[in-house]
Length: 319
Image (cartoon, rainbow, N blue to C red; front, side, top):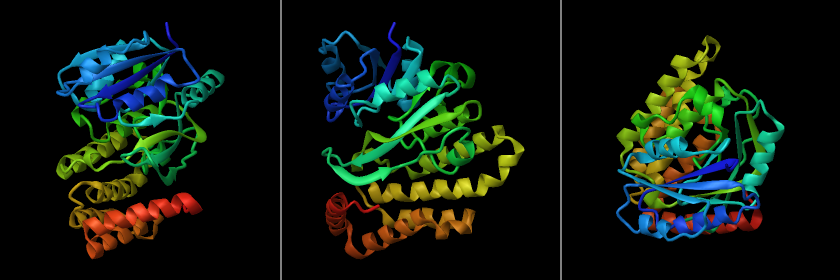
């Protein structure tokens, strides 16, 4: 049996899935199975995956259940000791699996290992921005304020974690379901970080839902669940957790096709209401600048400015 099971949820994924799968097949570590969950696609996803000849690739088709349901189907079918998750539009550095397997092999007490993340645009071009989280050990108090794992394509998890903590919450479907899962694991297992950008997270406007109410509800469900299960000495973090959640939500309307800066403003106000100290955090200041630019420049010129800024950041390595 393979040591690693890689679970790839795929819903109408043909725009990026071939490139994503290639980044998996190009890994320096080869002892894995790739379980692609065709989650009710209406495009060519099922037919294309069926034509792949690599024996490590397995296809499971089901009615649409969202990311949570697709990942759970993959977990049930997985045979590996370690489970890794790869979204169908993201990419991996060739050494990603090798380095995470080595980490879990050398640290049997660790439940989850994550890496840094580099952002790419819809064309696969780096924006120049990195998410460089390196908290290790018992990370729950960090994780409740920010999803330090950053995306669903980052974590490698020991199988026993799901046996202890359960699987992804299907009530969350495709909104912050990964954050909920990592929080539950963090209550029971220490984490390890690899301080290298081994995941390339693709940002594109189609990936940002306009269903802001559903996203807000999911954030609330995760936070309430997390604090209901958390020890008493963590309860003081609840307001700050809600504030950081609203800060994350506030970016989504700006990143959507509609560039709804007024909705971003509403979420930013909610963040300050939950925790006034958030006003002095760097991410809040970045958000306020982005909202002001969108309001002043308009969507088209704002997009042009972002392209210019990303080019500049890549050249001079701005933070």
